[in-house]
Length: 108
Length: 451
Image 1: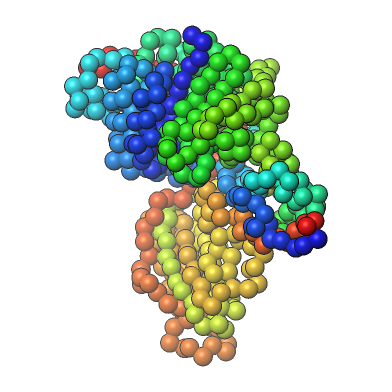
Image 2 (image 1 turned 45 degrees about the vertical axis):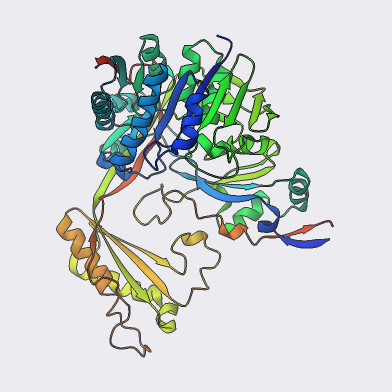
């Protein structure tokens, strides 16, 4: 086993609005093998993504392992709709950074 | 017709200009339609509420001109949805006028222009609220009359229906009000007799132009081809390819669920889609299904004004002050409270360098950087009051009374010792669906001969 960062394993780690009231996160892998290893490692689950984002689990509306695109995808409700005064990320495009450094135990 | 081809040069026409190189390659590929969506709710509630654009007019005109000239030259229809970022009536009228001006400037031969509106009267929505027909999306409760009263402007999200109606009337150019991104393309395929599942998938895959291609590069043209059995998508840029990964990956972009796409009148089910690389730049998709809705519901978007808004900025370098930034902010807030009372105004502070972008979601909020930037937004009923709230909330950061601060000449740095007028503050008041009996009842269509 070796420890790798999610940013070294994934092709894409991004966040974006899904409508006015949600932000959706996509973690996409280039190789199916890597995707399967990350899935099996259990570092990304409904519980862990909420913990990493310090978000009440009630805010998590979707968590999907999307095999056709080798992607793990999850969505949270915003506390206020996008673009309300005080919202500093109208597009929701800079919310993914905490996932870059998530450590994954992968078989060698 | 065995197959139908549509090119899409831009995922949000006007927001940044299309890249002409790949667009011209796409035009030479012999499409049956040239189409693009021009709006999004991504841009926040201000443009809808304020009835303004988020995009510069020059970029909108650039793309409309490229598309109109190509469409008239090769003799195929051009379709635009969600005109001018929001698809309000004034934005549709603006695009219609731009089309007329471009046609006149280039002395184009006569063509049939069609357009439709998407704004919804508040009193119609009130009637539907009273009959229990306005349901919340994304965990919102049913719409109340109080929220309706707080709303400045409402648009309904058109499906394929007004596009099909205008194509059936023989329109060469269609300028749409607010509409589902995918309807712009699906409407064309449906009007030409292709099945719903393949038509809606074609719309889904084309709506963001080159976002379904790799490597990443926006505003490049892609070509979609539909038959009764499959959809193929091909990158037109010499630098891009549509791969299984890029096309499948796009299915989940900007939505919470990658399997289901809800549109007015039904749901596109992508659960069993199969992706196949058929050539270097082309991916074929099969296995999509369409499930018609039992009740015809239309999505509504509404934006309500909170107040006038000004913005101020202040920087902090002193580590002691950084450690006590919340007390600094509370001091400034208190000065506003003493001047204006507890209610009737809002102050919002984003502390960049600590958790300005992510707020409570920020895992590193206890580890601020060595310098901070505080962005202050003040909101109040009048411009005069919003300015005073904001300047008080900004300048009083300078005078915050921290007990052990060494720097007693001023607690923050200013790039500008002033506050700046910003767009009024709005909020999304409506993200709901409403039942209607006729798919066209909210979307009146018009036609005219231009030239």
